[in-house]
Image (cartoon, rainbow, N blue to C red; front, side, top):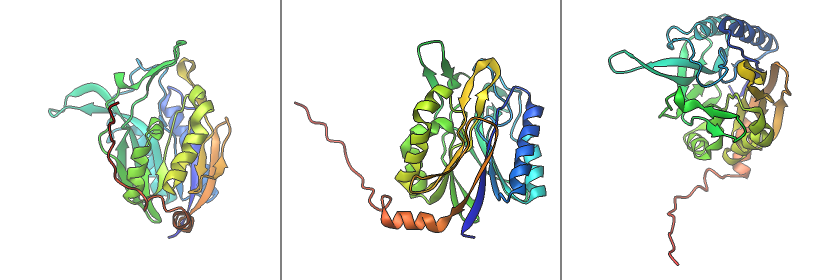
Length: 282
């Protein structure tokens, strides 16, 4: 299999989990009806907090209703589903609640089986100085392991949102075989307007990879605003599909020959070199 038809679902997730599951299912069915084989949901697909002090419901990967519904749907439709992220409660070695969560991306195959999970490594703690601030680390524990997942047409490097600002993660994924990179997000409107497009394109260009970036959009509980502009970027950095601000889907066909072509003409992965930082004291 050398091509893959991909859809990004752009959502406006609320604090009502059942409504969000229904919204996601409707868009997945629409994308599948248009030929999508791989359908990606954004970060926080099934629950959006009003602020970082609001705790999600105590679900684990095994009990999360959104994940359970997506497993059934993937099997019914015979397609891959990437849940951009869900909140799952973490337990200690004795099975007790730790009071913190993982922000976890989940990949489901066409048999309805979870084949890969990735916990967000880089947590978004930011203060813009005018009352807008984010403190993911107050509620979440950062992941410690990068993730490569096998698809019929190649390897998918899984990331989440704020990870996009840490290019060494993407380079490591590409150097270890990734030809596609997923960057599901709930990008703040302010930072999205400034940086979203250039970051997605840069990660594609630097690594000769397709980038699949489903996003949240609009206004959410507590007045939180997200940027939208879900997109699919080719290995040359060209945006081949892009949404604007409304909910819906965008689609594109990924051709792995394009990855090979770009990497032949611009072999940056082959040209990586180890180096040391010389400290000159004057």
